[in-house]
Image (tube, rainbow, N blue to C red; front, side, top):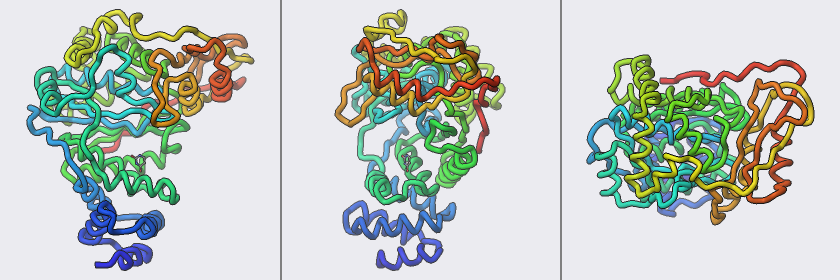
Length: 433
Ligand code: URA
């Protein structure tokens, strides 16, 4: 088999066989196929697309290129949740304990953040002494005992994707639906869950800006999951503004803990219940979405979901007194208001700019080696649809600097205020099964 023939076949609109896709993925991972041929093929895929079968085959080949995590020692049906990335997205800290509170095992492997979106592990490490590095045996034992554990991703999962993604990034071939879907799903499938719920974000702060593109991506991913034997459901949720009111690390943990204690931050609580409902139905704990929603909502009110969070923190060595008394979590030195300079209604909040403003404060990493400051972040005071008067705060910056000008400018740039009344955006746009 020759790589040249595979490139030409795809360039001319042909459908690649499993043998051809495997030849490419194996050869490229090992270094036998050079970057210039791999880029020619990804560009041909960019223009010609892939059938559902080709996409599933490519994804499986990327899964098989490295280690896979075997969760079979965990009792029960394991459901994973994946978000395509958003600002203020602390849903994992709500959904994990919530799902665990009805007995569904949650074996969560997460990563760190880079750029404008924060990482699950970084946020969790706001809690003193919390350990996220653990042996596989300890991870499995924790999930079996407590139904919930969160650990740093170990192992060399989907190395073919790592290499291909880096290549796509510099060759203009990131924006290809089968390649994006295959890339995301290869990492999820290698992580070993039985079923998967995807939170596909849509809007200005999302990877996919339009509903149409987000739905198309969701469909591709659901097809891959289902074709490869994992029940997969996608929720298309809004990312035209940050989720909830807090963006940062410790402040996001605080907001999540409050939801678990029954507080109602509308969008955050609603989306968490939505995702958790689909997860627990896939795990066959409930027969219907409605039944699941009602039971999960009850566990937010009766303290069971919050108890699951406490157990998670305790079982991983974290200082649980910080969760019992949220004021003990890391705090910034200053609270700096950024005020509206006109009356009106908030019509847009650029989530990415808010994420960048938080990063400037030290809540995120501009480069891989940056150190996170857990106490800093941003508290939104106004969201889309809210009325605002000139001089009223739009956000409060939680800052260790007295006058964080770069963040102030970025926040000002991110808010749009209009004279006309504005509707609140729809939170959940569609469910794709
Ligand atoms: N995120 C991924 O992991 N892969 C892509 O191709 C795009 C976004």
